[in-house]
Amino acid sequence: MESPVIVAIDGPSGTGKSSTSKAVAAELGLSYLDTGAQYRAITWWMLSNGIDVEDPDEIALAATKPVIISGTDPKAPTITVDGADASAPIRTPEVTAAVSAVSAVPEVRRRLVDAQRCAAAHAAQGIVVEGRDIGTTVLPDATLKIFLTASAEARAARRNGELKGGQSMAATQEALVRRDAADSGRKTSPLIKADDAVEVDTTGLSLDQVIECVVTLIEEKRAVR
Ligand SMILES: Nc1ncnc2c1ncn2[C@@H]1O[C@H](COP(=O)(O)OP(=O)(O)OP(=O)(O)O)[C@@H](O)[C@H]1O
Ligand SMILES: Nc1ccn([C@@H]2O[C@H](COP(=O)(O)O)[C@@H](O)[C@H]2O)c(=O)n1
Image 1 (cartoon, helix red, strand yellow):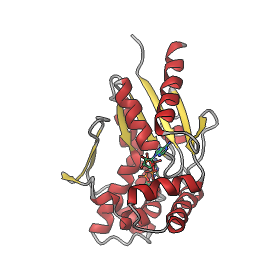
Image 2 (cartoon, protein in one colour):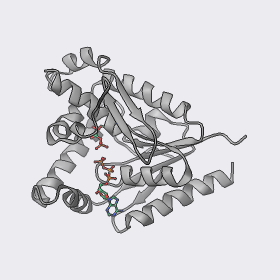
Image 3 (cartoon, rainbow, N blue to C red):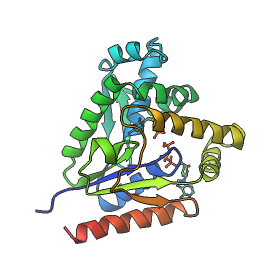
Image 4 (cartoon, protein in one colour):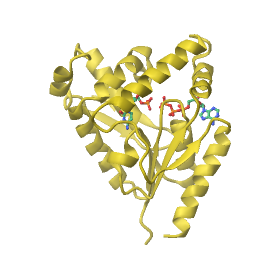
């Protein structure tokens, strides 16, 4: 029997990782895991429980306390923290502003990486896992690794489309670039392209074109296995 296909999709913020990964997984009948949602969930728990998110020691001590469960259906992904639906609160500006500091703490990464590997190992048909360190650290033996990029201008325009004019394009771009710099600059599992990842610059591509490109890359890998 053919072994399950494991796809790692990494890249900076706003490059289209979530939209692409969900659509590709749904089209190919694979599971889907949003690891960014897990880092957001633990950050939300820290903020809600009075943990000082500027203090790595305090974060490390609390890192294993929340129970975080991700649902892996690409058509209806879910995330709960201690049994409560966290899908909305993890997307607030407060969580977005704090998540890079929390995710830089090795104890946080250790527990989430274990959970991510476990989800991949249990995906019977295969899985698309998206994040920042999937190809380099979480699943170094993935069948296919993709690194999505896009210009900062394109990414800010996409995000502003979602935020419906809540902040200026310049402020959105500055926040994206600052978060990428923090994620790329941390010591443990920084955001970086794996040597064997295929880089796809999505700046001039529609979402449908990116999805088609990734599906084709997966089919090509499957054909030679
Ligand atoms: N190729 C594309 N062309 C135009 N818009 C796109 C494209 N890819 C994604 N988008 C839009 O850009 C926004 C950001 O996409 P998405 O959330 O998938 O990015 P991401 O890389 O997962 O971001 P983050 O890392 O911040 O979670 C969404 O509104 C999405 O619909
Ligand atoms: N594998 C990962 C995934 C995410 N992070 C951190 O979480 C933040 C939020 O991610 P989104 O994809 O939801 O924007 C991100 O900025 C990283 O700090 C990570 O460290 N590793």
